[in-house]
Image 1: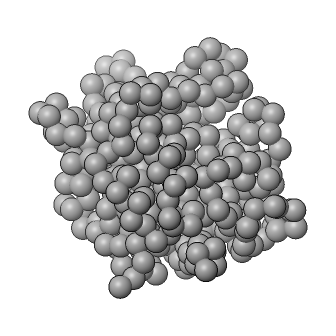
Image 2: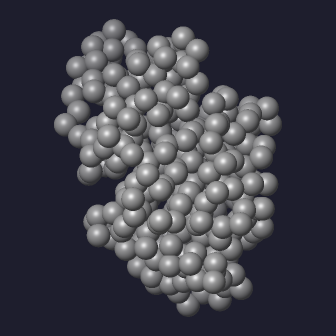
Length: 309
């Protein structure tokens, strides 16, 4: 029987790596634990950006050019909303609305987010186990030079322009891991951390009581794929954020951030000459094609297998 793999993920980079895993192993042996710190309510709707990005990517519905949202999207709802003076800083496509409306309705009638997510995955033929990190509300907030900003206002409305001083995860202290999360970690043969933003996409997961401890005590080797490529981030504000937090934009900083959690780090060949005390493997970590994604996923599993032996 093939190995059971757990991957902690959030955002576009994480979705790419999960898709890569699906090319090299049976989908039913993969569990993705997904960041929900980005979730928020907008126009009365429950929005789960990282869960949706993964759903769209794995079901073949994603906009490949931008990495998020639906392919072939239309915008009549947004046009009508703007004509009425409604908020237009967060775009909701017509097809995208179906997901948010149904999620909102199901949550309002007592269904937990994990059950709603499983229902959507099944409807779209996504065979991996997709688990939100928690069914409880957790919200990422950033302390910036423009004051306190909820994540989406920082990321979308302000396009990551404000300078970040601190990050917190409201509600995390009182949250519980979603059903299946701790069990999946305990039973895994390999655990991967996607090249998602460590501070904005992975830290919310680690802030949920029980998850960090489960990782620290897991029998499986844990490998993180570094988000750093050539001394920069491929996408998003990772490098900018690291600089603002007083950190070097290096794999040494990434390894230190995950200290006590990971056993190994997969680093890009453009940064391969960096002196790391942590076990690591060097490869080309850019994931521009489906073959690239499969190759990076295989390299991460190879490092995990080396650590296990």
